[in-house]
Image 1 (cartoon, one colour):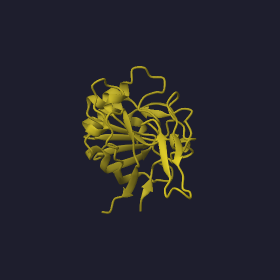
Image 2 (cartoon, one colour):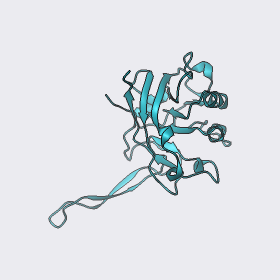
Image 3 (cartoon, helix red, strand yellow):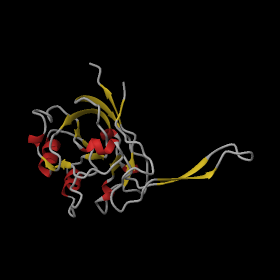
Image 4 (cartoon, helix red, strand yellow):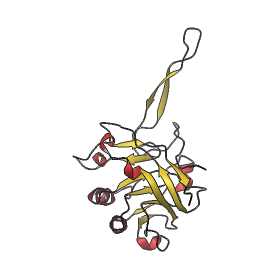
Length: 210
């Protein structure tokens, strides 16, 4: 069984305010003189489910092409939180959520908006203390259904910088609706883009067979 946790990318999909929406232009169409369709796509690398590259917020941070793939594939724990906005702490997670986890996926109310391709009116995000505790537990990636690991109006991006400082990677704008909490295999590989500040991913979860 596969859970597809990627929202559908369409021109109507919400993007970060001010970012470039997805567009798809048919430049060659099937017809009497042509045997194929060809399209030109224009989109932000933060469109839909995506992996931030450190270059997004660090002047000398690597592009997606330089990122190791190990954090984006492997055992992941999905947990649900009830907080609807603001920084999450370890107390917002189920007891023991970090113990033995390799990747942490956080299901919040934001998945309702993500599934519909909308921008959530408010969303929770991991606080710096939670990121530090996750790093101390050996977690290598945090994945969210919200569009950012920081508040939308943040100018300092403390969460992003904390991830980079501790060597964690992040995924944003996933959709966990209909996926039970538990441990899974995550596969969400970024494209080999250089230069770029992020990369779209096709993210899936597969139940672990024990």
